[in-house]
Length: 324
Image 1 (cartoon, rainbow, N blue to C red):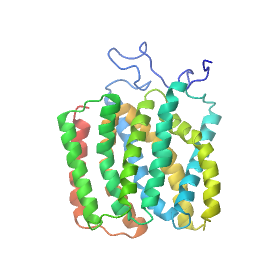
Image 2: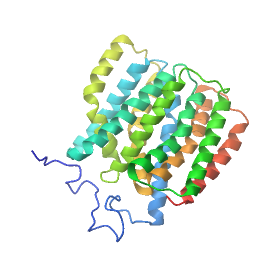
Image 3: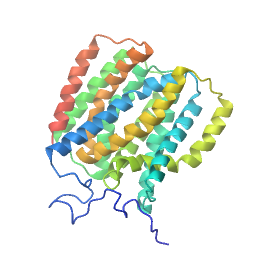
Image 4: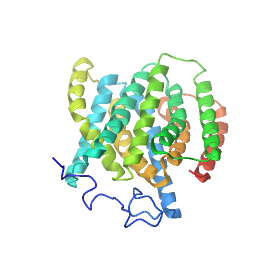
């Protein structure tokens, strides 16, 4: 039976068509954004950057959350809370179900950014410092750009790839040095998180070009409720929560900030400026995470931090100016 309810069938959903797109523009460009307009590019960069700032707090907030919750209960409860926020927005605005052709993509988003990345990084942070865990984010921009090239056929320039590789190398060198160069048992979790998150970002960025970004993460969260609700009940039964100011604040941030609001602006930014360019803004995320770790967790930075920050900012500037 043909579905009558679609995320792209109603005027409330931002979808451009060949008829209303500028000549030569792809039909899946976000509606209402002039192609190539400087203000559009600037807005997209700002939105993606806000997403990076939100994500940079995820590891410190998770460390706080682990003070009162077990890893399984923290991940499942954060997903349920985020889904309640997203579901409330979808219900209040009477957003129809997405078209069936988008369900597979939403499943990838759910598996990557709703379940996979939060769970794997939370398990890793039981034994790893936030500095060491930042290695994941240091490699995430390059991995996301690579998956985008494979999945969507994007062809960034050689300058872009050179700057992306240089930025990734700088971040990884710094974070490994920051953690003493030691490899831990958490590394397997971290590298797994890297792959599933890059897949979720790529697929979510693609979907955000045919439906608003907040609906992409919103539906992914809601679709996970049949898994996360019983998972939360089971986890809390085996990992009793001990509520403290830190654990509650950490839980609320990873649920509302990292899991929903951060992804809303992130996917919208990727839809505007493209997945490769947006992904490279995340080169700044490990350094921001380390700053938050100092301020919130009392961890220590080495004098190499400002030099690495300067190198990363140069690489980001090059990727944003390069073709692709």
